[in-house]
View 1 (cartoon, one colour):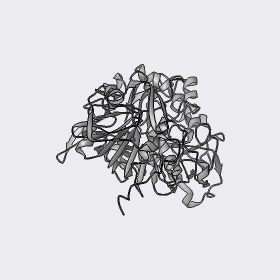
View 2 (spheres, helix red, strand yellow; view 1 turned 60 degrees about the horizontal axis):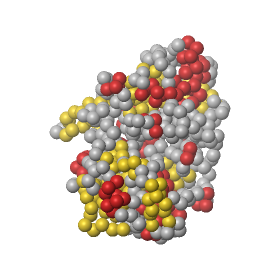
View 3 (cartoon, helix red, strand yellow; view 1 turned 180 degrees about the vertical axis):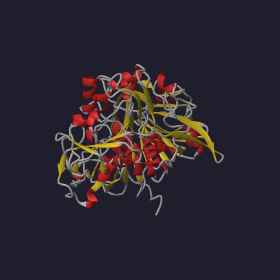
View 4 (cartoon, one colour; view 1 turned 90 degrees about the vertical axis):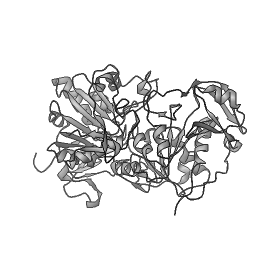
Length: 530
């Protein structure tokens, strides 16, 4: 090997042994070491090895739009167990990913754990500590009193999360999984294995994953786009140093993210004018995002999730606010404007990009002001499901960072449509329901991703914003506090819920301006602190 750590993809794949636990750094199509995963799958097709791997994915590897990721290795015999923060997901118009077939068919043990907790587990493994003791996940589907994070029957037979009492309090204990192999991705490696991330949209958790493997005698494989002379990388540009990297593989066609070869905006190498950020199209989604924006205050640090909430930064910008709110997302970006589509997880004009594990410490401790998230289902206890629909599980990605974020958030705003598939018209200051949809406020959600009971016990402020009404979580249940102009409370709200909804004695009509296709004079609330 000489002074260089560069080897072929085929050679790197041959280093993985039967029964290994392999941790992979990725976030769907962002930062995915796709070529390395493809090489492992190709070796299995040829040699029937490696076999019975356990895969750790703090965030999903691959998607349904061009980056196969985990689907390269979703083969019977190759994988025995997957423990992931999220999985590939997409619309019902696309075929179900192979990994979901294996989960649904009970071919592998599959678990979905919070992304931040999975990063915590790597740090605990690296420091030779016994596991993660945390409140994250209590009374959600990762609590062993529910599903314990199991995504299928086979996983249920092998529990990996325990509920324990410590210092007089109830906690969840996530036991460690010691990885023998880490597969990470960067932009550039020098011949010694120092890694820099200058074209990456996020740092993700590769350094922590490499530490976990290095400190336990395993091997770290880095996929990069290019290799440069030893010592030519600037010291402060090296995010993962050479002492944590054993081998380097090169994929010169490595995409920055799904269907994007390279865009310097994504990696923060250029800053764009405000005019480069397109505003949201006029529709009911925009109405919901506008109402969510009204919950923000000057100087807020706001966590943002995928879905309707992702449009809120564009709403705030359109209304004339530029740097009054700081957006923080789980992949690590701080500030700027979170991007949409295949670039979601990155931010344009970001102030900084934090490593994901550090960002999750910030989230788990509730250091931010507000979280804007989505919902699929809501039930009588105020529980929210975003992680699994039994009929079509691959339409959802799992919990990702949702549970980490909501555990100690001070304020949570869930956004979504009141019913699924309704035909709606918005404009001229009112909402019209042309055809009603399927009920989403139901007796019991299929998967508890947010616990309404824990939210009440923690004193969290929780809102559910829809196109036709706003509800809040109260000690007595869900309470309707606002309805849209043009909406009949009984016909369009109360009768379209399978559960009893309380009505606030001070029920208001939502501002008609947000139902009109023109700027609506958003006014941020006064700063909450300093």
